[in-house]
Length: 105
Image (cartoon, rainbow, N blue to C red; front, side, top):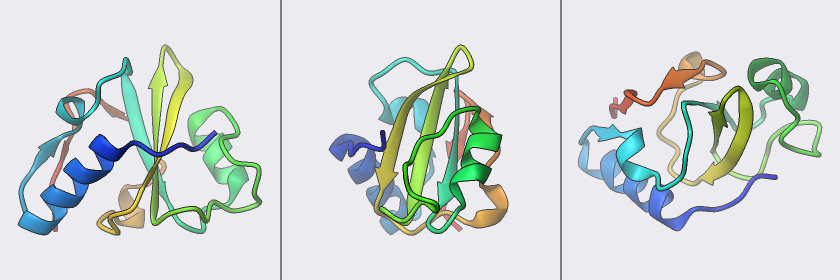
């Protein structure tokens, strides 16, 4: 189920590189009401427990440094591989609303 999204990935990379904030809703062009992420190496069972559905066939997520999971009405709408390694585990596996702003460290 994980897919790429060049627009989202490049917007996140730009924000991480320049140290600027990015409102996640402004970088997406699809419907969602909650989003969260996991980092590389997260066990599949932990992803399913956090977001309600299996999103990878692997035992652990390993396809990119981060996987953003977007929910619509409580169901997974998209799972997008993110290349920038700019996200920390302590913020992972939580759900955030459409008003979430990504802030580089």
